[in-house]
Length: 188
Image (cartoon, rainbow, N blue to C red; front, side, top):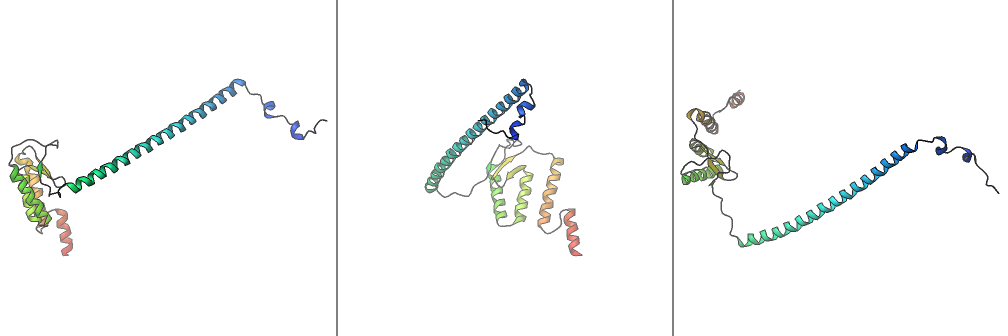
């Protein structure tokens, strides 16, 4: 017995309807195969990279635990930290070696730091003027200072004027045009 045929069986299939050139299908299928292989390799590389990063993170965490333990041991054995002192540095590009009285400069910087801590800004600014006059550049955060090449009188004048304006402003008088305007606006 022959099975009954449906109407769908009588319709031509895609293959029968269009018979494309074999070379075109070969190109398309080769490209598709290459794309799939590329994507597979890309996924493998991504997985390997993630595994490597995870391994490095674990190593860093184990190292940090070891360093924390050693730091804790050192803190227990080390004496209490003392107040950091000012020191001269030559790490700045503009720093030069010029003979100066290191003890005097360290003393001035210590006095300035103490005055700032006590919020005595007038004393602090006067010491700043002395340091500017000596061509000393300092950094309060790192507590380091260095010397620069001596400036001529013309080069010094603007810096001294700026420093004097700051001192004048801290004494209650207006130092800049903007401050003068705001003070005038407050009086009215």
